[in-house]
Image (cartoon, rainbow, N blue to C red; front, side, top):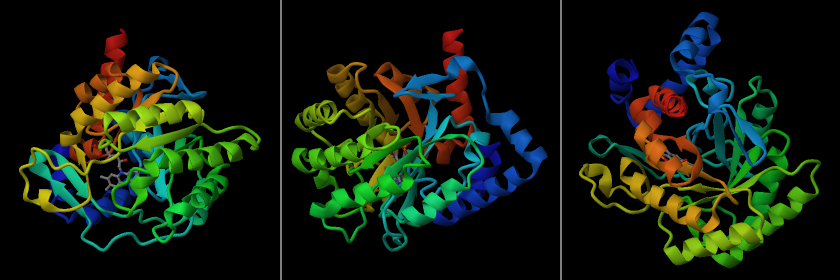
Length: 341
Ligand SMILES: Cc1cc2nc3c(=O)[nH]c(=O)nc-3n(C[C@H](O)[C@H](O)[C@H](O)COP(=O)(O)O)c2cc1C
């Protein structure tokens, strides 16, 4: 239904407008009990065999919504109605910020891809925390946190700590995002020294809370093997609970669409293989000690299965959801069930 009717309508609008329309639709549908139940009957696959216990959290199914789609936790009560087992909100920064100038989001339909240079546009940690406080659904929420554009890298640790403290009561796990290509200088924080500093500061804060929350790190697909070795070492030394591999790429290999010239992070099909390679590499080094959440180019059930075979414990989708709709989430869950039958 999505690909036949909704996608052609949505794709006739400029991408950010389409995003707003989708949010409005989903919100409206979920307000009408009958419509919500029909939606659930289409897309939700409920089966105990799909559940996974990862870093002490029981996920009802292993397919999540990746960070960036619901940055501001606007539809937190709605996502489970289209089949997701968990949702990652953010990236959240301490202060609200507008992000980069528009246009900053581009479809590349021939390549089944998106380029974005949003720049962490979000309502800021206080507004988002309040929204999470008022939520009704029990869906598992990851809080993806970052620094404001105006914060110098040497003070970044404080921004991450502020977001951690503010969101702590309302999220189930945290993700430190140092891998977005759209905040100038952010990816320099993936270097050993600044990264260790930020993660150690957060773990210190975590250790004095009532109950430790799992802390994960989201990494870029553009790291070299030496840098991935460093990440693996840092993950162990800072007692990380998990890694998310990967964020968007700055690479522009094998693209055909004219929007390939746009700057920003590339997501979707062209990212899939590199992202899986990173998972494989890290899983080989870390085994099951540090679970990996796959993100990057999951456009089909096969992509999701490949990522799990490469060592991912859970998968997330963003661009696949834009191109394939919620049927993708359902199909991955169904395929996983059939494999276990
Ligand atoms: C428009 C857009 C905005 C995004 N914003 C964020 C963000 O704020 N924080 C983050 O960690 N990742 C962000 N991402 C990256 C996604 O979470 C995901 O890691 C990436 O797109 C690769 O997955 P995909 O190929 O399924 O889209 C964004 C992606 C897109 C397309």
